[in-house]
Image (cartoon, rainbow, N blue to C red):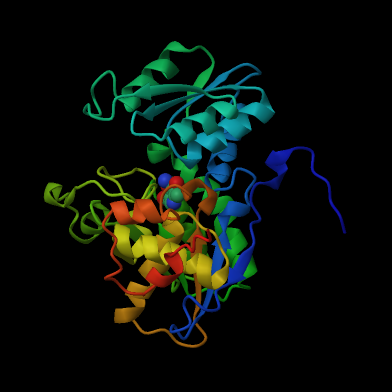
Length: 345
Ligand code: PMP
């Protein structure tokens, strides 16, 4: 039956889940990917943008022409801009000057005002994107600041949507959930709901090499020596996000840029799913987890695939970029040959 929708916001959530058939064939469990790229803004962040903005509306904080402010160069910016258009709000995004021009163009195409701030200054410098966003929000009447890293409505968005969807789609059979942690909202909200249904479900967070989340989970300490820059966007952090409920996470797996990049491409080649860089990261984390933990045939593993590969065409799907990173295929799979292009003259 064909169904029509009032506007794109009605398409948020209820994303499909698809079985992975080849990329995880060595793992004796059923593995499903939840495809968050099927949201209208092509990522999981649509859920939090809508949830946080509608909560502010219910509190009477927003009226037509109000302003939504956020610090982001990534998926949250696209989602906040999209929701703002449909609901008639202004959208102001503070991004770092490391943000690629095509991303800024994308945000502007969705009507956002973009402030480009220096990445090289400390977070408490008045020019940093955190401080600029705070100042803009404070100075703009009728505005709200999404503040996704420290907003518990980020968790709540996934507690009320992603978690219940996974429970229903797996008919309550889920045994493991894996999700990349940036703010931690996706994993925390989903895990909170799922553990309430079955406390035995294993919750595995994915962290980046260069980020502090895994060690903080294990020791309660931040180890500054572990912080270094890395290429995977949206995963890991150099601060402790308030939206990450560490107590719900059983284990963190840390993945690196190179393995995650090749695995992103492996998922495209073996499953025909063009995912973002963190799609590769979450599959890579499952592979690493499976090296030290055994799965049973009736285990049901759910991986969150956060966004779409179209945003990474100049990055992990670009052979030149891969070569520039020095990714020389000395890692787990040999895909060099399929990266070659035949030029017919
Ligand atoms: N992958 C991508 C591409 C993202 O943009 C994000 C959000 N930062 C995540 C994963 C992690 O999601 P969360 O913030 O809910 O932990």
